[in-house]
Image (cartoon, rainbow, N blue to C red; front, side, top):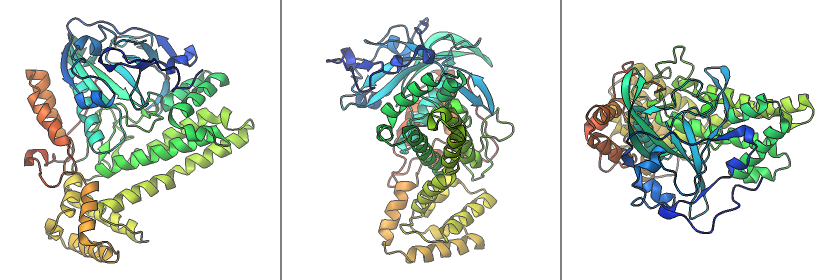
Length: 490
């Protein structure tokens, strides 16, 4: 198998398409060649022109709904469905792309590589009696949230287009069908490795590991123990990612192992949402009855998922099983300290702390405890702390005592007040996708075919760290706690 960076075509195709197919060079067990199912009447709903431009694509020439619905294939496309497995709510299942098709990998003018995937493009051999389709609301939700995450600076898959299909899809009633074009560094998952391991063929596992090293961790590929370096690199990247989620109150909602991307990107925006009032037990997913994927549990679940990744890698870590298990355990146990390092560094930044002191963790935790006790809004509290006059946030003696401790802490570092405020504004967003505003945008688009509400929302979400011109208050206020649920869309 050649390197992902090899065998590029000499000239890009019309509209700037430059599709390659390094994933297809993996053994056939990992994929099935399969075309999208054409739809009745594709209609382009939204096109991410900025993303298209960054991929080297001409947005004006891309204005063809057929390409984003599967009715036509972009030049150079070789569609396939990917095989993978996954632990879903703790239960292992053999899975695969049941409603998604990988068209290929767009090679950008600067040599970067991104998967171009159609989501909701019809049944595949992995559909397991599913209809292979998607509905407009969840596809627009993924578009909104993934683009908001990108603006927040959090690694994420992105959304290039949504088209309607002119067909109805049965969910809870009949809903308008849609297809999302998703862009990702790759769609290799923890579940992809679980799939290879479950087949019991070391050659398959090694081929996948070698490909992942080449595509995402080339430095680890040259390490003395490349597969251990792969495990450690994935752990580092996931720890950093989950810490970033925690810093902005993002709750993924369905952290199954098939939804953990080896690239370190956030993937699969199903029952996800952002926390309003701070409560570590917050759960938004309608199917997460036990709170497995609650806000406070996301670091623990990430470590659990990484343990499944480590188990899959055991045959490659060492020929002696006991030694392989020891190496894997040591790496996975290390996740906790790595995550805490990333989380604490980010929380220090949110409070304008440039230096490290031993009592910083206690200072941060006491603020969070006060926020939880008083139902304080997570985003707005940190935004208010970033502004002058933050003492006026609350007259509660508990807060005032904390605020004085914080001011004393700031005074012990050499950075001036202006540098502190500038740093805090760079790490505390003004705006997140407030749940009621997302629902308002989706309702307008789905029920009235009115995209203007979503377009206004996207415009304000595009500048989350602009503290100089606040958006209207309707975009800043949250919902009362416990009033919101999200759904899978499948």
